[in-house]
Amino acid sequence: MAGHNKWSKIKRKKGVEDTRRSKVFTKILKDVSVSVRENGSDPESNPKLRLALANAKGVNMPKENIQRAINKASETGGAGYSEVTYEGYAPGGIAIYIECTTDNLNRTVANIRMYFSKYGGNLGTHGSIAFLFERKGVFTFHKVNHDEESFTMELIDSGADDIEVDENNFVAYSSFENFGLMLKKLEEKGIEAESAELHRIPLSPTTVDLNTARKVLKFIEVLEDDDDVHAVYHNMELTEELEAQLI
Image (cartoon, rainbow, N blue to C red; front, side, top):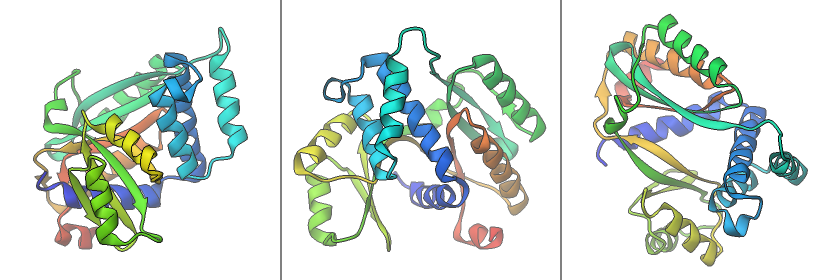
């Protein structure tokens, strides 16, 4: 997993800076809706809904908001969301993988095409850049009241195969195959993650110059501001030198 460390730190930093509370709530509520429509409203038999509820709890979402989304998704004939992905290249040949949750596929694809055209990218076909990323489970925990050594061992025992620690958080990674197993083991141990998600980690991050980095980050910012866009992944490596210049 060499090279993903700076990416994950930048991803978390950018998430804090760019996402507003209401947008985070909207994305989670879409996850709730999709999971209920796919597998029903019982969290015990619906792992995807259980994960969405855990993430809702991690951002202190009001319970009435969650229940309203579950009720609406359970209604026959109600408007529903579907999940769709797009792949392509940003300026400088940086690979971009976009995950969307939408109730209007025509609107979403039109917007995505427009963003690629306007910001100097190229929209590719399905599967054109997916091989450049590895799907990993990413679990984030606040460091409050956690002894670093013992908590790290608990995460490893639960299935983590890599752990990062900074001044505020533990970030544990699991394989895609072990994501559900790790989630279950954490539940059994009574360990609550601030967030638990499947991410796409770049296998070989690509270095770019300052001008290209600014173009790519602007493109990603525009994508993330679209209400239909759930997550954006890229393989641009932001070195410490480049990061300092971008501030």
